[in-house]
Image (cartoon, rainbow, N blue to C red; front, side, top):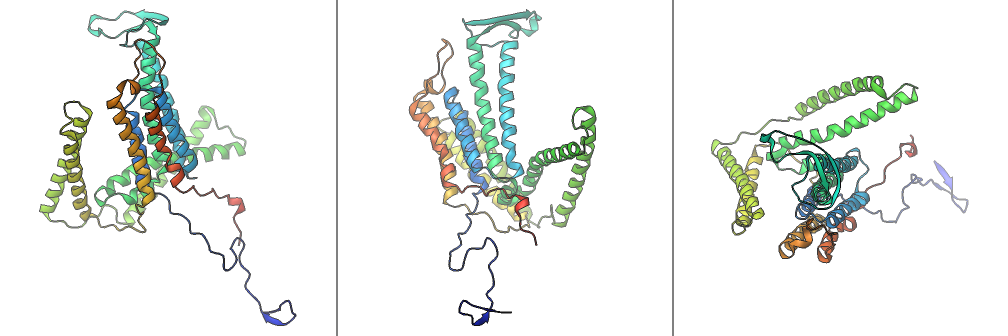
Length: 393
């Protein structure tokens, strides 16, 4: 095909660039690789560990706010990332149930500020120490609120890890010895999001057809297709796993297999003993060395156990500087709160007898703010694509 240029002379037609393609000579920015999923889990677990070291409601609320802000700005637009709301609702349910138990069953904390009195049910002598009803004090409710808020913060931190880290990419990053266990965990974690998506899709379809989607009748008519779809997905998953050789292992000598089992079992026992030593006052001298030795033994066992796996990795996720920064920010929050608990335990664990309003300690609060670092060093999630704006061919 020939065409004329501006001077009127014939020439070859230049190919027109496709829509959305930058002009020639303009450098195309390379997309930034997503963060390693293990870094998100280390960051979230470190924040959860920091939450277990304090009952100060102001610090716990600050931890929840920090994790929520990072999730809000870095959560990808994927179905499994919507699980954060479910964890927040679960944390709220824990708060309500803990306060309800404190009201109905009473609290071991003595108090003088009586809020109201419930009718008390007499119990037999063998149930001493337990009561139903009676006086409800402000001190008892404050103690229950502080304790429940700590568990709620831990649940929300775990929910942040589920919303930020891709389950499939996390499975790809697991050692070979944990691959089969990781597949079972990932399948279990992705079952609920798929189930919720199926329910929403079927309810929307019934509403468009003018059929009821609520009540017992709607639940039955929606539940049967959802169950059928879950069974079909299970059969398809089993066929895909069998086609990819799932469960097949390589031949390993007996001595290597026994050494792997001994190292893994001994490492897990060492981790448990070291953790117990760190959590108790009497084991502070031996807790850290035993924990490090247990971790080294467990990692050696996992490395040897990975020789039985015959799978390969396609484009493994690298552990780059951003992953180190994210995991280090969470570890710094946990370490500084542990240090604050040893230097000034009263600021992290406010008392309720006598009942006083909690105060916000300055430098532990500043340490919690270090957990905001992932919101600034990690790449922003890709915008959700609108299928109505996709180009047609």
